[in-house]
Length: 234
Ligand SMILES: Cc1cc2c(cc1C)N(C[C@H](O)[C@H](O)[C@H](O)COP(=O)(O)O)c1[nH]c(=O)[nH]c(=O)c1N2
Image (cartoon, rainbow, N blue to C red; front, side):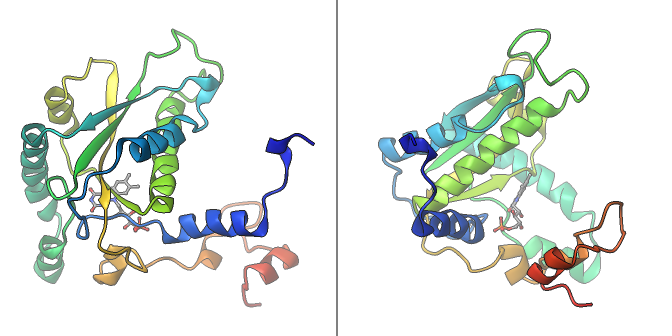
């Protein structure tokens, strides 16, 4: 058996699940400490090892440390966030406005992960029917980075309350390059033990048992072993 085929040890398996369960979206707990270049390189390498349709690797990574650029992005956020607040009224509006939804200036580095929709030429294997698969692939790069960051003790916050055209213009992206994820990265004072939106009473995690169906949408799950493993009551 070659080395990369050896089974995961119990500790390795637990480490992976720990990163999955303890990963958080961070916006309030950033510390200003810089991320060493070798650590950032590991995160980018993890992202670059994500699966991608036809091995398209449509991502680029724009590492943003300029305060001027970040301030421009924050201005875009503030404008969009004012509009977003208008979706809510009364108590919900007040609660929305109390939420902190970005850490653009507090984090030491911002990272925009983009998707080059033309990479790989006019036809990419596996992308003939579902053209959005390049975007899906780039999301997986984001998740790889997010999990690796957690294992490195680094928090990541995804900021999507942004006008994409203005963001693309600020970052001088070519026309075919889509700014898929704007991320804030940095060491943190703590990782919360639950999503911040849940801690602040905005929305809670749904029970998994309500989301697992059998064979067709909303059909009850008949697989007794899976039901037992998921602890779904009879
Ligand atoms: C595509 C996308 C876009 C956003 C987010 C996530 C994703 C996947 N999230 C983070 C989101 O609120 C968070 O993931 C959930 O609340 C669950 O919390 P944990 O990630 O488990 O801590 C997020 N958070 C935030 O403060 N501002 C934002 O604009 C966004 N946008």
